[in-house]
Image (cartoon, rainbow, N blue to C red; front, side, top):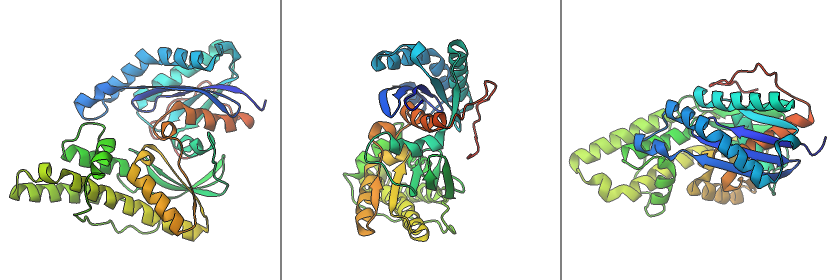
Amino acid sequence: MEHPIILAIESSCDDTSVAILAGQKMLSNKTYNQDMHQKYGGVVPEVASRSHQQKLTTVVQSAIDEAGISLHQLDAVAVTRGPGLIGSLMVGVSFAKGLVMGLQIPLIEVHHMHAHILAHFIDDPKPDFPFLCLTVSGGHTQIVRVDSPHDMVILGQTLDDAAGEAFDKTGKLLDLPYPAGPVLDRLAKEGEVKYSFPEPKVDGLDFSFSGLKTAILYFLRDHTADDPDFIQKELPHICASVQHTIIEILMKKLITAAEQEGITEIAIAGGVSANSGLRSALEVIGQEHSWHTYIPAFQYCTDNAGMIAKAAYYKYLKSEFANIDISPSARLEWQ
């Protein structure tokens, strides 16, 4: 069947999301954002999984209603198997299993990071194969060569912390509200790049951000020792300088990868691809290097079920269905 109707569930972290895809057309993509984590300054796994349990049925119904279909029209159910928070993943996988058993339709398991990359194929313009994808999120930083929807090779990845963690950690040090990434991005627009931070020396196309996080910590400690109001006075400039450094690190590696692979189709994906500074840098550098650049629509950058549905669509066409006894995996290996 070329036009299957697939219901997809994404519950890898703190967003409860459900989408309905009919062939190539996204009929609905509904997400419930758990704002209760703000008071804790980060995602609390137990709270996240409990919220998924409470909200998933409602979000499924909302997606079904918006799509204008009934459950009995579904041809398959897709779900994020990992990586992510194990409790959150368990809620989504258990719900998906119950649904396919009740409807007697296939189950499709999806790797969260594959889905971020395949989000580029939801809307036009779409990249041509092969393309490079810089996937940047709170938990991952990777450069991937994508040869087809089924063939992807990691060329480089973080050896420790992800770029998103560097943003989040900096936000915490600056006492910004959670999630800090969008707030830091907004403040960076109001500041100038006044401060420099050391860039890690990492061979090849791999990344490291733990040293940068430590350097920012010491920088703030030393300056506030001399002037307790330093952060308050210089906040936009600190944000601009940190953001500039992180983006520089990402772009230098991406340029190297593009030159090594001889590829000019370049994409970015993942939650951090919503960062305006990163988007601008990709556009400028893309023009300098005659790249064709691609970024998914904002709703498909952050964690969402639409990207899970799209990844599942390609698996459905090859009848790559999961066994009903699959288990979620917090550290699901790249397949």
